[in-house]
Length: 609
Image (cartoon, rainbow, N blue to C red; front, side, top):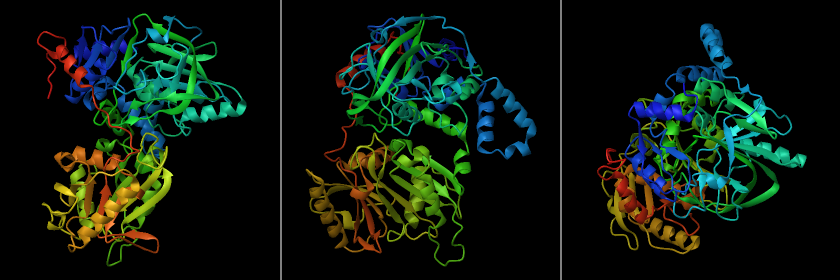
C-alpha cells in the first residue's frame, strides 16, 4: 500500500483516475469551483501543480466516488472488514478461529511505531500554505481534510488519543495570521472530552493537526469505529503500514503526514469562527469556537495539500459515506437489536433525514397491526451516535415484500400507503439537532418526529393533483412530487406567527373541500416547480428547511391524550427568516474556470455532463 500521498497520486494517474492541472489556479474560489464541476461529472482526482501564492501542490477529489475509494484501499479492505466485524460480533471468534488468526496478524502489524526524532520536515508558516477559500461568503480559508489529534490529558499517550476531522479556519475573522487558527467541534466529540478534562485541570490542551499522508489516515479521522478500536490502529490497518510518529516539544508529529500544525487550546478562550459553506447546502454561521494558538508548522519538501469541497449533496463526502457504509456493514444491527437497516439520506444532508427498517413482533395476533416494537427501535436509533442528530425518522417493518431504504421513492411510497395519520406521528420537542442546522429554535436545539407505519395498505396514493389542492386562494402552482406527495407554493411572510396563520388558513381551506385520503403529505414551499423537478430537490428542500415541532401542520388536526393527529400532514418547507443562506456559486468565477476545460487545457478531456 501507499507510504505517502505522492504514491497514491502516481498510482491513480497510472490507472487513468487522476489529471494534473498545470495552469496557475487561484485558491480563492477558483480551485473549489473546478473541483465541484469535475466531482459533479464523476470525474477524476485533480492535482493542482501551480497554486497561486503557494509553492505547494494541492490534490482534491481523491475519494470522488466509491469505485475509486475501493481502488485506493483494494489491498487492505478485506482485513479491515474482518477486524470491524470481529469487534462488532465477538462471538464470531468461536465460529471462525482461523479467521481470528488472520485478523489478529493484520492488527499486530498496525500498532503505531514511535521514532526518536523528526526527519524530512522543515518549519514554515500558515501563510505558506495553499489558503483555499471555498464559497463566496466563507469567513476565510479552511482545512477541509484535517486529521486533528489530541491525547487524554489525564492519561497521555498515543493509545489514549483521538483522531477526528474537525474543520479548521486558517485566516480571516479575528484570527492573527500565522499565530491563531479556529477549530470547530462539539463538546461530545473525542476532542471535546479531552478539552473538558484539560479545562478541569486548568491546563491548555495540546493539539496536532496532520494534513495529507496515506489516504488511510484521512479516512481514519472520520470513521465511526467500534468502542475500543483506536483510530491510530485503524489507520495502520487500512494503510497496511504502521502509523509512524514522534514527539516534538511535547506534540505528537505524524511522520507520514505532508503537513503538521501544532498548538494549544486554552481553557475558555474562543473566537468567532465561520461562516462556512457546509454539507447541508447552506452556510454555517459565525459562532464562537476554541481558538488554537499555533506553536509550529511543519511541511515536507514535496508536500501535497489535500482538500475537498462540501456543500449541497452529493459531494465528495457522499463517497466517504458510501465507503464507511461498505466497511461497517452490519454494525448498526449489532448495536440496535431489531434493526435491519438504517439509511441516512445523503440528498437531505445526511443528518436531517433517516429511513429505517425494523422488526415488528409485539402485536402478532391483533386484527389491526400497528407500530409497537418499531417505536422502541426508533428511540434506540435516535439515541445512537451521529444518528441522534436526525430530525425526521421514517421507519417500517418488512412484511410481505422486501424493502430497500436506498430506493427512496419506493420506501416512502410503502410508508405513505400504510400510515395512519391519527396514530403514527410521534414528536420529540425541545431536543438536540445538528449544530449546523439552523431550522431549530437555537444552536443545536430543535425537534424530531418519528413516522412509524406498518401493516396492510390503507390507501391508493394520488398520481395527479387532487381537486382539493387546486384553485386555493393565496396558494398556487400545486405540483406532484411523487405518489401521495404534492408541493404547493405559499405566500411570503415575515415571522413565525404570520406563517402559522397562513398554515391555519391552508389547513381550513383544504379541510372544507372534503376528505383527501390519497394525498397524505403536502409540502408548502417557496417554489413548487423546483421541489417537484427531482427527488433530490424534494428531499433537500423539505427536510433541511423544516423543524418538525414548528413546521408540521395538519388538515383537521387535533390532540387526543396529548397525541397529535390529522387527516393530511402539511410540512412548511419555506425558507424562514432565521434560516442560514443557501450556497450559491460566484457566476464570474464559474465563467472564468471555463479556460481549464477549453481545447488544449489541462482538463479538456474531462467529460462534463
